[in-house]
Length: 311
Image 1: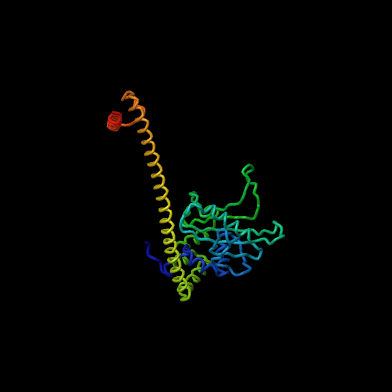
Image 2 (image 1 turned 120 degrees about the horizontal axis):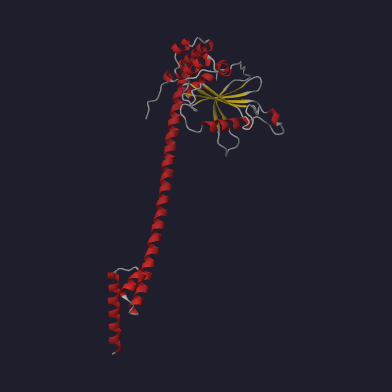
């Protein structure tokens, strides 16, 4: 098991620190402006760990940081440490959950807000070396024809190598996310990143945040242990059921085989009584010579007893 990081050791790719820092509207506005290349004035306070669920039966979604700007555009920012191999579909689900919670009964679809799902990762999901991959719906048959449905998904790669099409400030921001230090903030020559670093330091020095971090860690460990216990119980029950089924199947097969054996012995007994060829009986019933000899002796003994009874 890996050693648990202290609050001081966290960087902005760690979900806890990311959510705490980005819940500040000014910071979130600066980060969105660097990513998108234009100002993003938010209208309400950003929400960290925002939960969305359509019905109790649906899978719930926890957005790392969610905000809406004065033009009613929705933004979901996520950090993702590991490539779980499902990220394109996960962002599709996130986008869908944002849409499902936008309209009230009777409202027209044209009132759907534009929505951005932005994922920041320390790996290249597509292997093309880009720092930024932006996706919109477009037509396969007509290159350049876009659907303009208002949905945008962006994947940011902190390990990019091709800076074409992105600002130097975004490249510095992505590096800073992975190595969140004063040195990297100062070396970025970006006022926004330096302000971001000040906010990070405030968070790390806040005692209440430190307590929340420890509580969140303990809760996570308990949930993990609880999950392991549930998994063990389920695994045991499944194992028992599998064992029972295998036992039943083995018993059935053994019973069928035993019944077949008895049937063949009865056929062989009748053939012996009729004095049929020994090799023919063996071939027809599959019994061994020893089994046939035993049947033959029993038949001779029975015939002898019958003869004595007559006389």
